[in-house]
Structures are given as C-alpha cells and as structure tokens.
Length: 130
Image 1 (cartoon, rainbow, N blue to C red):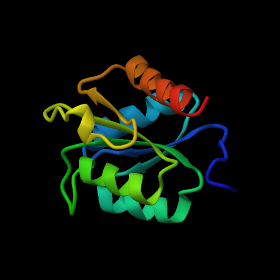
Image 2 (cartoon, rainbow, N blue to C red):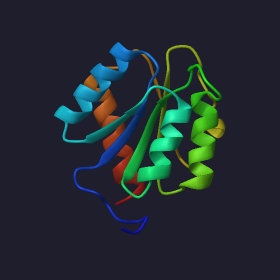
Image 3 (tube, helix red, strand yellow):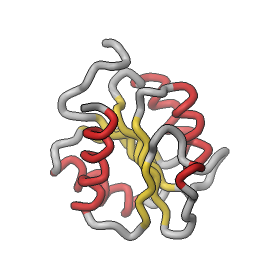
Image 4 (cartoon, rainbow, N blue to C red):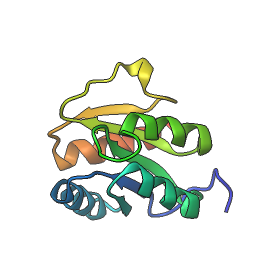
C-alpha cells in the first residue's frame, strides 16, 4: 500500500500515558468509525509506526508523557519520518504556539468532548486530504 493510500476506516494512533483518558478517547474514536491503535508513550508509538506506518493516517498525542520524549518531540519525529501522517496534539497544560506544531498539525486543549475530538480529526482529514 502506498503512503498516499487512504485506509477505510481511517486509522488513528492514539498516544496517551493516562490509561483512563486513553481508553475513553479510543472508545469515542471507535464509536465515530475510526480504527484506533494505542500507545502509552512515544517509544511505543514509534514502534507501532515502524510496523504499520502505511496504515496510520492520524497521530493524536498528548504533550506531557513520561519516557524518552514528549508529544511535541514525537510529532516532530513523525513529521520527519512519516510526512503523510496528520498531527493532532493535545494537552491540559502546555499551549504550543501554532508555529511549533509541524506540518499544519492542530492543537486541541484538554479537557475535550468526544464531538470536539472527532471534529478535529475530520477537519484535519478534510483540509489536508480532500
């Protein structure tokens, strides 16, 4: 499968270290029709992308996570290595400047509602992949 191929249902890689938040977001995304791959930190997310980068269309990551890098660093690496993956970054604390988010990615503050999360991902996909 080529990197420009669109997978149906769309695949979202959800990176969140808080298990309850990750489970809730995964449930919301699945109910909205997305296929969800989960990772508890950036290292796991990179391993998932190494194995399945041709399937993943959206990276949805928290900023503040334990491990070798935070969500902003993860987004930078993903943008460099897998430029076809769309980026949605979230945090309850950090508020990155739009210039800090690579490749037309978007920021969504926490807490968020399911409709807001789903809407952001649909907007990303519509805007960048008409």
